[in-house]
Image (cartoon, rainbow, N blue to C red; front, side, top):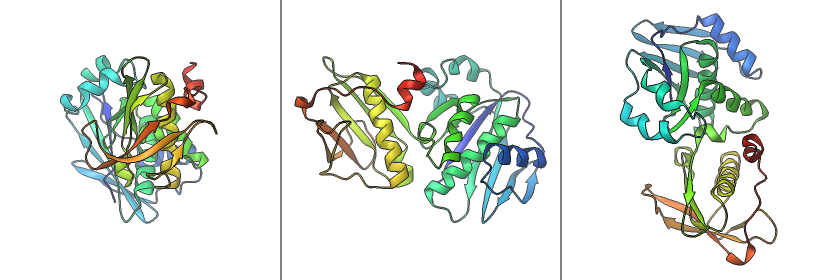
Length: 270
């Protein structure tokens, strides 16, 4: 199983909630999740929660998350515009990770659920850094996005980062980061005939589909937002410095740009 690590940035008060309070928060946020049945460790040792056949480790680090790891994302995250000044003042962090014989999806889900319960019950928590994707989310946004798990949907915006921006002319380009941790290929686009916000919607939809359905999108497939839109999927090396092979989307220029209509566009009011 891939190691899914969530880092919770905190102010000076690093006290974690009591076991009973954390268990109540987990049940409140995720009613279908079995409540933790045991708690071990604490103090200088990691706190270990037993949850069914799995365990979740919570380690308290009395030092900030190394700034070189946060600096770039703190200036670019769409989920926490004020992240840079907030995080420059953080004093310590918690590390949350799921242990046991879990699938990548199960491990990421459990680490996300426990992290959401922690930030919900810790006034000192500022936000969450999801290591495998490099996503950085304010605490309330993290809890809201984690709520997708209740509907059996992946919290895609937590687990996958989406880097999009302008290319030449009116085109846009971008890529995903985080799918590889789920043993899935990343998506890359070198030239999409659409605005960056529309490409963002497209990549989020494809990543969410891959997380929910596994490696169903393969080289040779054609994907599109409409029946007329033709976007070819090819196997390629990364054009953005990512390891391994990726799925590159190649647009049929005759189809024209798609319209933004996903849940993200509605959420952002664009």
